[in-house]
Structure formats: structure tokens, C-alpha cells
Image (cartoon, rainbow, N blue to C red; front, top):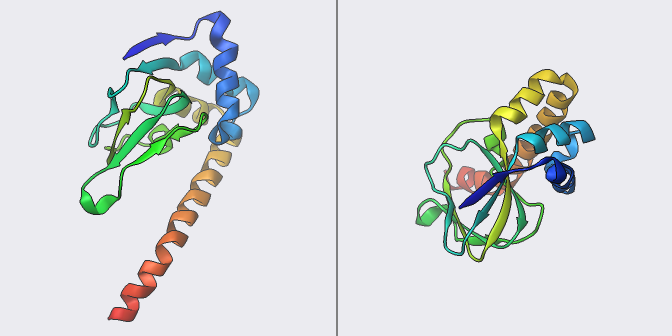
Length: 161
């Protein structure tokens, strides 16, 4: 993996990348710029592991270019899938929590990412109550979507009793 901090000439480019990722819509332009300053561009060769299952993340990855393969834990956890849409966020919950991942992500082809450290994101949350509230709204919406997706399975289990 090759990595480098964004220099002053590239700081605006990193902030622009963050602005294209839907997740970072919760941040204003200055907050994205602060995150860009703390972020690192990380490049991965084909077949290189981005992160392994059970690793504790230090932050989230924004896909700039390339293709990644995600392999969930265990056979029952789900089939592997690919991620190739620029602006996709890998492990956004890692910006909030230091919990082990349940997925291994590998570069399929040469892949360029922007690593956003959890510490930098959490520092912004503590400095900006408005940002913290917007982040909480996103989390509530995501959890609501997960619960909705599980509802049919819950009904089937209830009917089988």
C-alpha cells in the first residue's frame, strides 16, 4: 500500500472528493476541508488487502477509483460483492466506533482511496453540535433501514413458532 498526506495543492482536491460522497453531506465545506487535511490517500495494488475481518478500524475509506471485493465473515454471512462506484464509503460506522469489522476487503484492480481517520471525524463532532446532530440523524435513518430490512425475517420466525 502506498500512502501520502494531502499536500496544500491537493487539499482542495481531497475536500472535493469528500463533497461527492453522500455520507459527508452532513459536513459543511470547512468541515470537509478539515477532514481532508487529516485524511490520507491510500493506493492498493490488485489483490492487496485493504482491511481484514476482525481488524479494528482506525477510520473509513472513500473509494476514489478502482474496484474492491468485499467478503463477509462466514458462509452464512453473505456472498462476496464488488464495490466500484467512486464516492462509496467503506465502513462508515468506523468513523463512530472502534469495533472489529466483519468483512475482508481486497483490491480487485489498482485502487485509489481516501482514508478518513476516526479521531479527526470525532474531533469535529465534539467541536460542532450541529454536525453531531446531523450525524445522529444519519445513524438513526440507517438503523431504521436495517430494522425494516429484517422485518420480513422476524415475521417468518414469529409465524413458525
